[in-house]
Length: 338
Image 1 (cartoon, one colour):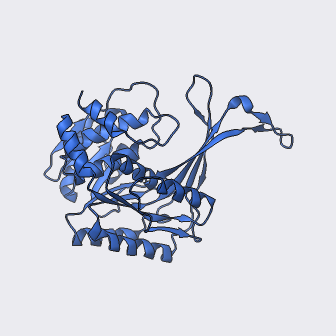
Image 2 (tube, helix red, strand yellow):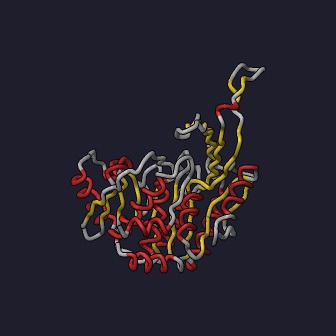
Image 3 (spheres, helix red, strand yellow):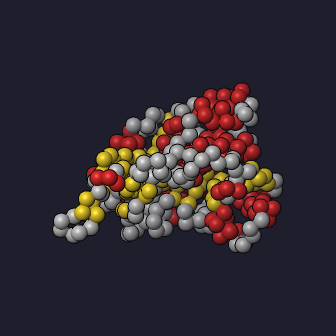
């Protein structure tokens, strides 16, 4: 991609208004110096002394952070957090992002804040070592009042936005923001506004999702396509059939094998992954791909250009260690133009 083309797309991105509906989490990193480890008098177990706590928005929040890094004009998180300390930190982390409007981000006593707590041991001259993670998730159906507010927000914002990202990250289906009723409301919006770019990503798979643009990994693709194909050529053919059936573009991430995209006219393309430049940390890379694809497509990039941008952005993020990373447009431009 030429620098001029990249600049033109980034300029268009700076005018885009984006809705992000889904599961927002708090990613808390506990930085630990192993040299300060003690033994508990009470239990005899190791005590890890935390030197620093870093709070970042995760899941749909990380997508929002990626969108902000690209300089999108306005970002509207549509989700919720609990009325708890983690919710306070999540809202504060989102507020720090440029162009974020939290008008449609609920605080509710009916849910816990979805959070990942990640203790990291920082050994000299070594990669951070992550200890067992502590997760807080909701394990009951999403309350009707919370669900109703999500739908009302979607209906109010739909006429004002250029692209909508749907992110289903909840630990159990229907117990997060993306319930069947919320999906039905998004489908109704899509019928009423067919020009609105909608891209969906779900850790539970997209089998029951209405026909939007799908971003999925290889395992999720085999489920929705009901196939066990492993060759890139077979996945390309299957992706093309799915895109024709759904009449929307399909994007499949394949880790070190790159990415496959297919269009509703039956064409499919494989974009190889960029070479690794050192140690990697894959946390957040999928969110980067989703955010990049959404902005690129809404900025009228071709599917091939969108995949090239997404692959390059993911390559930047996986080399950011011990953090939920975001791409830097200046670095992205430099890599794409070489």
